[in-house]
Length: 352
Image (cartoon, rainbow, N blue to C red; front, side, top):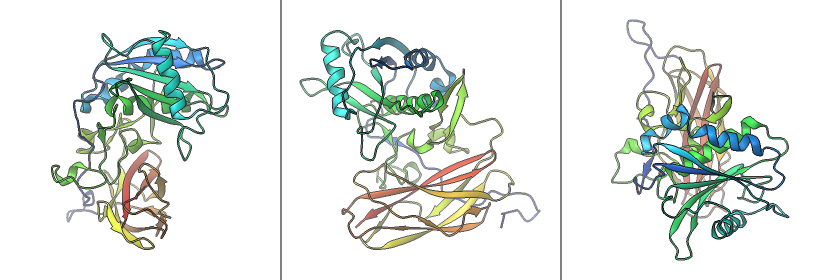
């Protein structure tokens, strides 16, 4: 049932405070990113990928989504078409090794002074072994022979069935995650409450700023760009920016709201309360498992119903298999969808 005031006016249903991402080292971001677009031999999308590199550093999107985190201006430092290719689908380590070789021989711009915030974006024909399970994009960092992080690396999958929009959405996701968390100590959700942080400033997941808005895109200049999590926007409405004009916010609020420990072989049921920023018809909810935390397990989410409205209630049951590793975490995003509506909220459990 929708919530309303005693005078009959609409009231947004009560919900937990908006969460946020935090950083172990807030200064460790690419404040002035220097983008290097790297393509491999035989890449038919090279012109588009290079044009995208020129475009993204000038966008309102880039200036907007990085502002919360100290990510400022950016430049497209270079476009490098390598003659290299891979005989088999490459691992992340294979790609890192190749990039270090091409830095050493001068084919790629050096990440050392005067360059400091270099991000190499490598477009690959097949990323099936970049991670397990396979991923469409991933970012990491390069380490000098002395063991010091020297630059950030993003890898973007290209496969025959993907179009331009999917490629640029993935690339924008990885570029902003690399800029805000270049060396693993930057901005991300925290699966457990940090006693140094207020309770509203952490998420029930270790997802980064792109993961937390995955599946929601905007278009600028003819390119598709993924929306990105914003702490400041979360306090007033939709945390995924840029937000479409006139967007109606609809979401769920879980109780308990933070990561819960569950015995292996057991399960836990969360109460979900629907809430919206304005009157709207019931919207659809789905539970989607995201493998953002490692080690992880399949929590087999079960929703009690497929729709919810403002003030309405549903339940989400998550299970821990007996075979799960102790302290491993699984995260499920409850996705709210309807015409003109997008909302997402993470719910996590930890195996005892």
